[in-house]
Length: 243
Image (cartoon, helix red, strand yellow):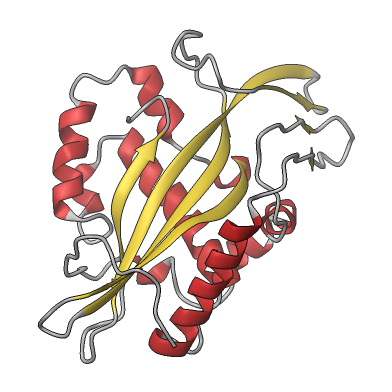
């Protein structure tokens, strides 16, 4: 069977993200049933209405747009390749659960500029670039980067890559795309394409405006025999905030 196109430069991933990307469901994510239901859908978010107006605080999300069937098939085939050639126990649902927890934890550290604590979770060269970008980043942008677990409304796999090196080392990279809400005050000209949402909190009767933001995080793991099985983040993008 022919393997997909091999690409991406490869780096040896240090330990760190195993706590978030274990192939088992985490209790914190399990309690967020509305997120899990949305993650199982095959629709891509391009227009969403998000509300919480009843006494129980339930949230409803409507998605539109059907994804490209060729992209959907390519992703399914990539997951099959991972299970066949790299990890027979791999589950994209479980991986997605861990990726969402990793997003929440890493984005919070980023918003607080705690770059030292990112070591082992994020590749060192990526941390260096982030420190440079954060040097002149407005405080409102930093707050908007933090993604609260309850505000992650949708997650999907954007791409999967495989890399084989001449010395026998092999890697898998999975690019995850997240949509999350923020109440941070951001300039209209910067987020002119962002959707605006009204979230109604019944207990205090206040209406809070939130914006839908997107983030791309790439996770990489080395599958070379004898190497500790850990994932590391090798790419971080927060649209309009960290371009």
